[in-house]
Image (tube, rainbow, N blue to C red; front, side):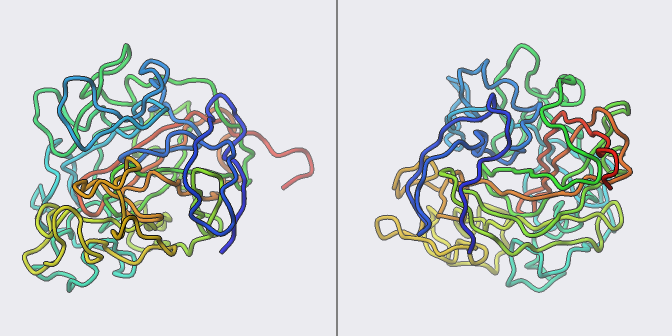
Length: 396
């Protein structure tokens, strides 16, 4: 275990103070850290185009608008709606997404004959099931062949659905002056000034956060700002990870994790992806597309069997329960729950180092974050404006 108190990034316009209970022996020193840690899932550092509405919404992030009854969403305290840009109804081997299907029960949404490619050691759901059996109910969801499922838009779709489509899950979006439900990120999230300047060939820090945990795994990519911002462009420039991920709690303390990396059976071929290290906690045994053969998880998220795999840290108990409400309470009726390093984890962010290719074109670029889910047929996307610079003379 490695503990530190290193803040994310250096642009203080995007940084604020966040407190949380001390949960590690290395202390609870309050430091400056990135704000967007509460989300379905989104890029935290560098700050994304998807989070620009933070000031417009009075500092609220990923909350549901007044008048919309949606107990799953909540006021998260800063950073806009970055977690609400996603694609859904996306299964492996298909050319398009249907914009509304959340759970597929192991079925392809386009009758694709593509087989899953993900090694079982990188699964995040149904680890007990036999691959290809009737109990393998997540086999066609995006993470089971990383990068092979389509997206609606490379920077996400606001709310994950068109206004005329009922959608699935928390498919909501509060209208802001530049975006409304159903808008495409690459069309309405216009280019901005770079928020980070990175040297070609260097190793840089990136981070993302979870709001609702759908398992799966993720990748970081680049696209030159001079090219059309498409999934095809991002697939030309996948980034490699450098070292293992770290879990950074909101008080600045860190835990070194053991990453599970995948570069076989990925799209594009040889691209490197990483398993989401935070285990999902199911609501019950039936409401998340689970097979009939799985039982024991009782509503509302009662019992350790609800947790899909062992967490990467030792977790404390909360009033005799294994976890607590993600809003920070010990609400025993809440299914939106988290442990110290499990579930809908709003207490921490996942930090990685990635390598900027030495031959990447210099100039303005866009960093793309893509999270392929396993529990749902959904993909979360974020885009951030950066600039790639030439190494100093004499430096390789």
